[in-house]
Length: 308
Image 1: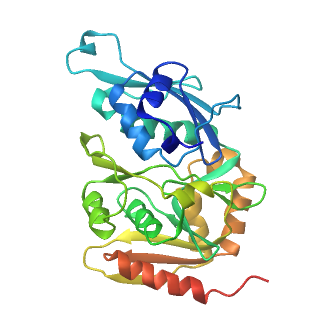
Image 2 (image 1 turned 180 degrees about the horizontal axis):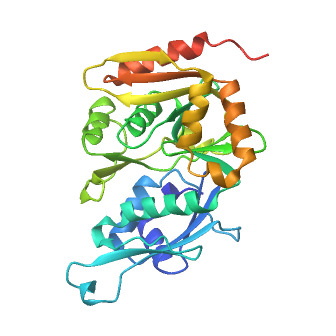
């Protein structure tokens, strides 16, 4: 059963009582929240996620609560709480509950998922070949990830490149993509049929609206991908498309510095990065046109030698 199979009233009732339990990639999350507006947003944006109605092992138990202060009625706020620890997030305005849920869930994953090497990277797949797009905020990786997804590529993640420390494969985690500022209209214009949630203005990261991952990507969350390309993207307003090869030594160092938990996982992290680089071609990408990027990278992937 998926959230799309449920009524809005069912989701709202579950949120404020026992909580909704859903699957996102390898993680099972229980969410409680007595915030009426949130139910409609989840019904729309979580539509493809599996809704779990039986006893399962829960990875993260999270709760969006309203602080019982004078702000309860005047400029009401919401706080992110979890049974797994305290992220120390300051309260958000009540109508920013969805961005708080998304950022709080990121904290849960980043702080407790050390059985993966976690790269700060978007990840997509085309013709069975995994493509990592490691970059820090502002480089355009989330915009690229949404654009690839709307052109039929499999979306694995816009934020976490989860590398299985045992197999070296990429674990999908198709979370909502928080498009920011100009990227919101870029994707609306690029793909008018994309499902994008409400606009949250003046958040701590600017204006934000959430892109819903395609059903096909969510449905294949249990299928890991083999990395074949590592591409470091950078949006440049005056560059339509430029691809520059990067040496494997340079790429290894950049990936290691890009990881959330490279020092935590130690030797296994180094081995995972080395293995990933050994089997991948590595490039820097400069771009300002999404269609041109997609067309050229599809041709590049088709030209990659077949694996033995």
